[in-house]
Image (tube, rainbow, N blue to C red; front, side):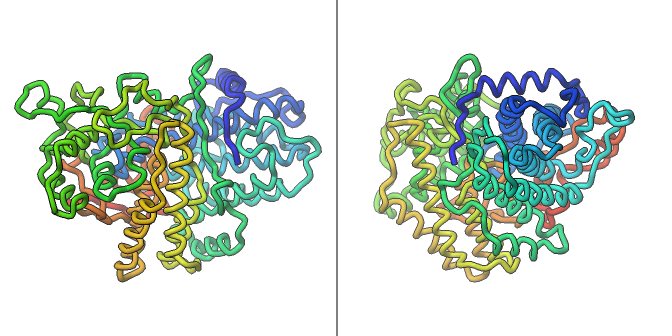
Length: 574
């Protein structure tokens, strides 16, 4: 299943035209004069725009979700308000207009594959939006300039929307079972294959059912039935990912993390120390593929200039006594202290601890940047002086890993251990998911930077066996699930929404310490301004345009009111 942007310019132009045809508010959509009888060429042009738009809509909050989960510092102190996501909200509804155009253009039943694709895209993207906000305008959101809807679109309940999305998945599968008279053209996701689209749609439904299981009366039974029925993604060759390219002009199609890290003096946010630090201590084989080290010396706290760049509270890894003690134990089995070369190596892992909100210093040339995976950046090995930005071959052709085979295996492990009735060998699936994810990281990192050095089979096996040992040592299904959740936390670098959903679904990984092979997430360094983000706050500007949004802006509290399927309501203890 290849997802390459071979016609990105065409996609961008069509998307731009689509947006220009719409006004500022979410419901102002004016499509073709006769949408029920589109020319075949129209669908060829519309499909790549719709696919691109749906994926963009589904990844809008990926960065902040990674911050909520403690992987990096985007919004990790939860200082959110009703102006935080105005752009996110608008972008979602504008993006999804292309998908709605496809649905309207295929109502005559003459193009079932195109229609099924639009249904699957809608189920995936809208599902992510509901997971982020809860209730949103849905059934009337894209009806166009219909009297009474352009400024007063009703909000639909999140649970009700989910039920419709599940139906959409079933309807899409039915469409793929029909005969398509003309071959699908312009499909950069599955190349027009009804078989591949059926498989992806069933995986999207599986993901929706997993999220919703605690909020539906038949949640566990329906989830079990979906697993038992099969037909979803099971191998890495079937993975669903968003492939960026090295294209710069006329449209820059390089990975957004690459653009912010390698082209703008590293304007990328800080990567959290726990993620990098524990991967160092755990001898994680993905470490040099995930992160690119830039700092080449240890900062001096006695120097006024250096002191202004060192993260708050002595958390900088080369100066952190507790970390150096852990390093001595993990790397040298307490037989010697870290060497001078070790200290210089650690200097390159320059990030922050959770909720260190002391302000950004003049440290952009020092911050650790995303590496070859998933950003399409550079590999960063053990050498003391990291490569200059021009020293490798990383050129931005990274990926968004969206729905991978290893994700599905982790879904099944979670379902088995969380008592849903889903069956299978959870331990074997856990091992398979880890190995598959590591192989995927190596594959995409090697494609991005030819200087990538793949970890040895022995190093991978040692690492996997260590996590299997933690799993075996856990005495209950829930404690085993916590172990699995922590490994998922490492695996989902570049998949912020997945790990944020996991934490809200299960409450795992639990709070705890920053140490080697911990199965917990470090609590915020400083007490955050708010509690854990259970959803996103509604945008204030929507309330000024839509009277139905006013109560959501004024009454829904993002760290108090969970979405319908969240029965855990994670809270940090201080």
